[in-house]
Image (cartoon, rainbow, N blue to C red; front, side, top):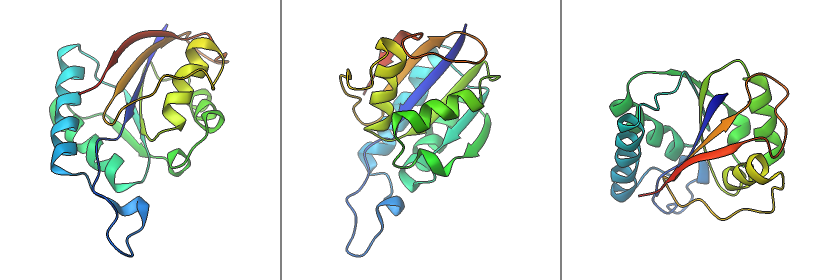
Length: 158
């Protein structure tokens, strides 16, 4: 088995007039949430081997706050995570199947639907993922990863 950690970005500031959604920074509340997520992960020894992160500013800032607590991990910006469907995210998992503990930092509704797809086999069977929420799933090692083959090992939100 290997572990997949899915982290939704923390609360962000609303877009300023003329500001692109991708450029929205974390709010002060969001920074505190991201730090709390980092502490939760560190306390459980859930330090990733590799991180795939959306290029959105709020996801990058969430990741920076988390890694400041958990310690360094190999990081890759993955443009396809921004506005990703569960299918796109599932493809990323397949492409990184060799990683024992993978952290994906992204957005809803893609992340919450991916949790449902991995856990129940149906992407429409989701319960929600609040800002800065963490879902930890155990999935079989190596490809292929099958829908419904994951076990939700832990779920946390601030």
